[in-house]
Amino acid sequence: MKKNILIVDDEQFLINSMQRDLRQYNDKYEVYVTTKSRDTLKLIKQLKIDLLIIDIIMPEKEGLEIIREVKSEFPSVKLIAMTGGPVSNLEFAKLLGADYSLNKPFSHDELVLATNSALQ
Image (tube, rainbow, N blue to C red; front, side, top):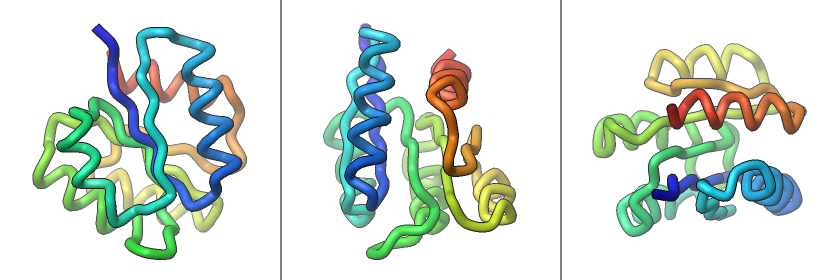
């Protein structure tokens, strides 16, 4: 059975690249993307997401706020937080419930390792 992954970031190029990387690596992943952070909770419910990969710094709604909401409403959803900002944001994301974190820029291998670890 395929695992559903949702990538939320405001950089379209990055999420397209991540989507391609994850699909090429493992055909057991169905990867969805959005640049609209305010749609995250609706998409998690609608698409039955197993893993959320979210940027912390977003223009519409901050990733840290979304992490808190996701962990409250969907505690079984695994979470990978990512940022190009201060590393302290990743530490705070882990305190809020993120399972893994990625500091931008990250490698293909780091993405795959975090994803596989989260979905085991």
